Image (cartoon, rainbow, N blue to C red; front, side, top):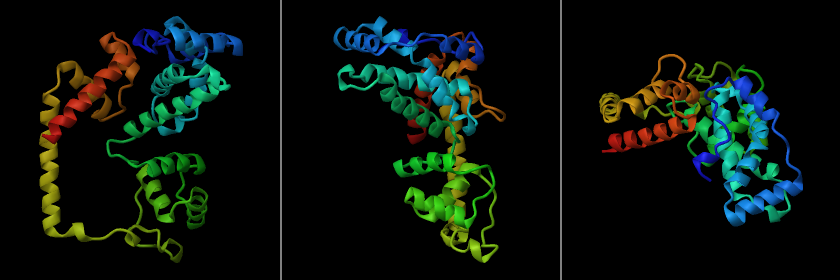
Length: 280
């Protein structure tokens, strides 16, 4: 699968126009789907791949709608989902006896999940597989933005087969709310931060080391940014370091007159270069 198979970019048209356009694209019958998939698999027929992707773009839009509560631009979620769809089309085996849509949903969701994890905050909130599972399950199980009660935490922990402390900690990471260090009632005992936080890092020497590390990271970030070319630096600053709302992929694509996928590639290369610079 190559870049010229990209279905359509979200640049040059509004999101609503894009959604209307993909919803007008025709469905494929199962026979057509099998025929096109075999052409792709046997002959690497990119026109067949393009038709398979186009016919399933509406599925990506539908899946992406389920992730609007994460505060990320819908256009970016769709763009990432499209990448997952293309990966699914490339790996699909028409002889397995399942429809492409059933196979593709896994890849679409996986790509969107990765995008959300990368962009939720600069500080990683879910770094292990179990934390990622808890992150997405907690988002779907939690109703509203009110703090969870002890009973709710216990119920969610039981349903997800994790410890109540893990649910409480992930909720704090998700919403970044201020919570009291000490329990304010008997119900809070065991789930307040004092129950699982130690004070070893509050020692003067530890605080001094942390301050020195913070200063070094600040200087290192400045040096890492200065190692980038002007376009890459602009993209990183707009996507990650903006004081207000971060720029979307398609906004930057319009600014530089390139595709959103190209902006994504530049961003990934710039981040890799910065990580190498910070690690040096």
